[in-house]
Image (tube, rainbow, N blue to C red; front, side, top):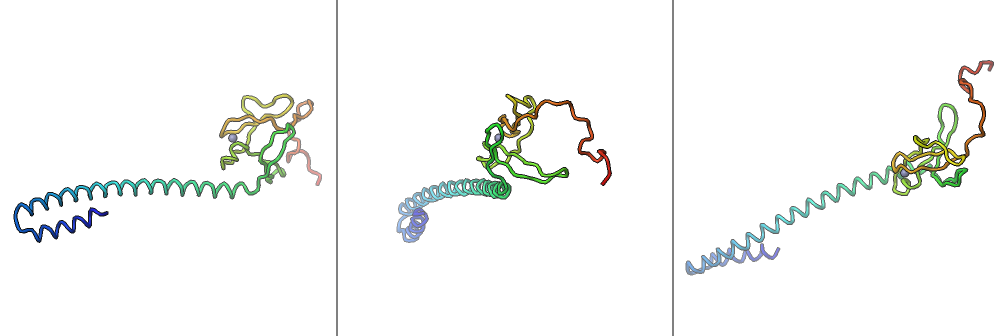
Length: 164
Ligand SMILES: [Zn+2]
């Protein structure tokens, strides 16, 4: 910002000038300094804009990470029957407690993506196959149950008989 100080000195020079030539020279110099100040101002405004964008993006990243930390607190690394390592936590549903498994790849990128039963492949080499809806990876999970006749609907349901 030396240009601003120099501009003030030039203004004083114009005041003190004795001849028109001296005034003209000082005015010309003053104009050039003002143009350079204007250029500096423009780049400062651009810089502020860049910092504002970075600030907004960093704030969003922090919020995303804080959100992940809150969600991730109940998950722990767990080995399923196939040897695959996934992050799991137990949740209580209406029909009892069940494990929810999260994709380890996504977990390490601060995302919790709950594994779902495969759509195209549901089983492989005697194991259930689950997939990650986020990164589309497939995971061999627990052993398939031994083959048995199809269960009759109603097992474990409210129609399975009163008595209690
Ligand atoms: Zn994933």
